[in-house]
Length: 90
Image (cartoon, one colour):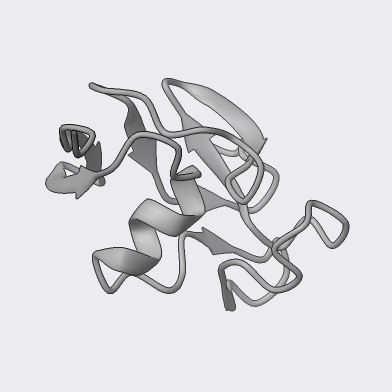
C-alpha cells in the first residue's frame, strides 16, 4: 500500500508531502529551493549539504526558528516559514 500524502504549509502556501520526507525534501518537491535569508545582505539559502552539517537549510517550523529542514521529518499540518537572519529578528 502506498503511503498517503499529506499537506503542510510554506509561507501560507499548501504543499504536499509524503511520509518519510524531510521538510527540505517536501519543499524541493514543491519547487521551493530557498527558505532562509542570510543575516547580512538577505541572500537566499536552502539545502546545500543535505546531511545537517552546513546549516544552510535552517527554517522556522511551527514557530521554532533554526530547525534543520534537511533532517527534520515533515509532519501533517506543519507550518514552515522563511527564516530571516537568525530567526529571531521578527
